[in-house]
Structures are given as C-alpha cells and as structure tokens.
Image (cartoon, rainbow over all chains, first blue to last red; front, side, top):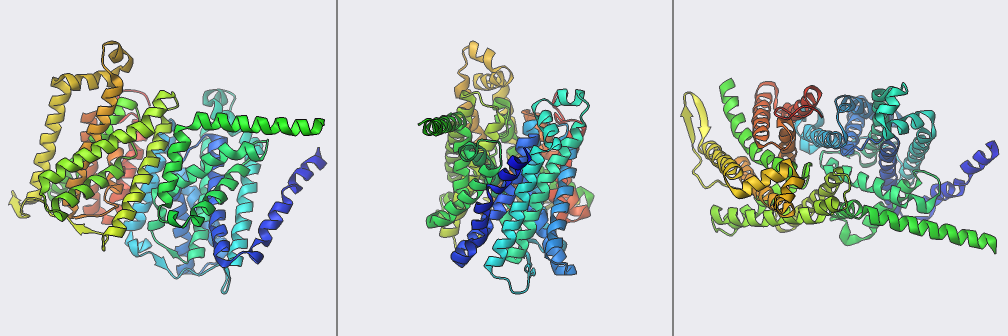
Length: 325
Length: 293
C-alpha cells in the first residue's frame, strides 16, 4: 500500500519536471502566459475544492483575489515587507474575509449564498474604487516591488509554478483527508451530518476560508507580478472565468484520470488561458468568450456529461481489449 | 442637512426601485435573479444616448428604441439561458450561472465596442428638462429630481394597475403563485414568462436612461454597480414582491445617501452589502417575504 502510494506520487514527477524546465526553451512571452495560467490554476483549483468538497459555490472569488492583491500592494509599498510574507498575509486576510462572509450565509441555501458572494465580489471592487485614502481609487497603487530585485520572467514562472503546486497538493490533500470526508458528508446531507455530531457551520466556514486563502495568495502574486494594482482587473468577469475553469475541469477530469482529482481543473485553467492568449482576435473579447462557454457548459450540461461518460467508457474498453490481446 | 440627504436618497432610491422591480418581476416567475440585468441597463442607457443625443432624434424616440431592443435582449436571455434549464428540469441556480454568462458576454462586447467607437470613456447625457435647482422648505431639489420622482411614481402606478386590473397582469400573478394551476386554467405560462422577461428588460432600459441622465454621463460600465444594488434591494424587500422591491430600494437609496453624507463617500457601497447581510441574518426571506428561508 505504501509503495503503491509513493509510486502514485512519483507518477506525475516527469510532467512537473518538464514544467520546471519549460522556461529554458520558451520565449519570454510564453513564459508570461504560463505564469498567468498558474495563477488561474491556483484560484480555479481552490474554487473547485470548495465546490466539490463542501458544496460552497462562490461567485465572488474576484473579491478575495482583489483583497489579496491590495493587501500585498499596501504592505509592500508602505512597510516594505517582502515577497513570501505578503503572499501569506494576502491569503490570510482573504481567508478572514471569507470567514466573515461565510457567517451570515450559514442560514442561506444554494442560490442566496451564491448571490451574497456575488454581491460581495462587486462590493469589494467598489470599495477599492471609492476608498481613495487607502486604495488610491481608480488611479491604483503603483511601484510595488517585485519578488526580487532583478528577476526575469523565468523567475516569476518558477515562483508561480511552486505556489500552484503547493495549492494543488494542498487541495488534493484536503479532499482526501478526514476533514474532506466530513465536508463531503455535510455537502450530501447537512441534517444527517449534523445528527452524526458534526459541526456543520465550522466545516462550511473552514472550507470557504481555505478556498479564499488561495484566491488571496494568487492576488498577492498578481501584485508582485504586475507591480501595479487597480480595481479594473477585479471585475465580476474574473469570478465568472474561475467558475468556467472549475466547471470545465470537472467535466474533462474523467478523461485524464480515473480517480477523483483536481487535475482536470488545473489542465482546464492552463488550456483556457492559452487558448484565449493564442487567438489574437480573442484577446479583447476574452471575457465575452468566457461568458459564452459558461452558457454552453450550463445549458448543455446533461448532454456534455453523457458525452464525456461515453468517451471515457469507450477508452476503458479499448484499454481492456489491448490487455486481452 | 439630514433632510437634504434624505431628499437625495429618495431620488436614488426611486431609481433603484425601477431596477429592483425588474428583478422582482422575473424572480416571481422563475424563482431566480436574472444576473444579465446589469448589462441590459448599460445597453439601454447607451442606446438611448445614441438615438436621443448622438443622432439627435430626441429622448422619446431614444426611449422607445431602447425599450424595444432591451426587451428583445430579455427575450433572448430567456431563450438561451433560462428556458433550456427549466425545460431540462435542472436546478434553478444553474440559471444564475448562465445569466451571469450572458451578463459577462454582453458587458464585454459593449465595453469593446464603445472603446473602439468612442474616443473617451464617458459621454455627457443631458436630461430633456432644463437643469435648475429649486428650493422648497429650505431643501434643494433639481428639476431632474422631480422628473425622476414623478416618472417613477407614474411607472409604478401603471405596473400596479396592469398587475391588478387587467387580464394579462392577472395571468402574470397566477403564473407567479401557482404555475401548474395557471397552466390548467388555460394560461400559456411559457408565453407569460417570455413576456415578463421582455417587460422586465424594457423597464431596465428606462432605468438605464434615467441613470445616465442622473449621473449626467453614460459609459460602458454604467449598469454594473446599479445592477448589483438593484438585486440587493429586491432581496432585502422580499423575494418576487414588487411592493417589497420598491420598499427595499427606497431604504437602500436612503441608507446609501446617508452613509455617503454622514460617514464618508467611501462607505456608500459597503452599506448596501452590510444591509443585505443583516437582512439575511435577521429575516432571510426579506422585509415583506413570508416565513422561511
């Protein structure tokens, strides 16, 4: 069992190695796109984790992203605290905001919770826009120091990859842990879970806070990457694109691995980032494209799921027949 | 000074009331918030501006064109994002996600088109009435404030009359309360829902144009913030109830105006969210909502 588990951990190692070596061969531009892809990975995977594990669907991840970015920006420009600490601080503050948001929503069912999170995301943007004494409003905060003094795109790439890997392993670990199992039982039947002695509010708040932590971390990374933060990139479109990444990920997940995993979300985050960057005419209409995919994913969901299931089962059959022959 | 903030809040609140009513109409039909509403508000304002000011056809024609186009946009939202979900009997919160998709799509296209055709981000949108400041009982009103209050009152009275006194309005109410029974009684509920989407989005264009004149400018991001405030007001007031929506909107407008005037303008947006959270904590079904969450 232990060796099998170790083997399972080693299996993706070649892929990870290739990803680490990638900036050696790719252009500065491509390296940058990958870096953005990893940031989407961090947020997408953590959102998937909170949806899959706890059934907490947040439509306002952009708000936590913005909180992380502004925290890092303000810390780094005013107090001069450096990179890894700003990341942690941004994540923690976003997690605190997540806890505060989760409290009133304990009483809310599905849709009302989603609407509250959406209103939250929008309000964070408006506060960033109007609270000029702290956030400098629409002008934004400039001159945020980078991770290190003279760091090229490859350095940012490596840092983003490491954070993304940490986020991914963290979410996989949570999903497989006892805490994850408790959360899943709560997601499936809240009353039954409560009757079995589980502290449903605590589980729910913790799951939400964990996802928010990573969204905040990604935000802090954003601040260092662009060295400029303004309310403009934190619109509700970001929250939507993350939901699209997460939904597409859970759809294509079974094609990549047979066991439940967030690898599908990670792949869909990188895929969508690349797709929208490579189609030149798409770049300005990126959000429109995300909107369209969202409509398709939602409206066609039963058909898409059935199609994927058929595809997976035919793949499995082919595998079996090759073994037999 | 306090009374002056209340007057300002009343104008803002009555604008929110139009938006919240639009949300509320759709909510009473399909039990969800149409998140594409914010983008439709923007389209309404921009179209109204284009026809009325840019092309110089006057405000009346601008309003008619904006209402028709936005109404059709509402129908399209229903057809592409809401009806398929109802037909396949998927959970209704799916419609929240798909209308969110519609919103993002329309918003993004609008932003890019205005960016390409306009040299500036904002364009001035004058009201059809001469802007003057009147003083009544020591309080200051602009003429436009009075126009807004009068127009919103008339619109709400018309909606009220339509809902209570006409066959169509009763069909809407019947569908809202018991869709299956309404169907048995010979009401084509499918059409009623489509009409409601049309009417609600036509109302959005009225609200959008008024907002443009209220701010004095139009831009491609005009509807984003009022769109959010509108659904917050609709949820505060009670789900799917027009009276509740108007009440919630007026309260929200007053709170915002007071927060901006008394505490500081940075807090005006926070107040709306805090009000929503408090409402959910105290009474999740809203001010005029029934018992239960």
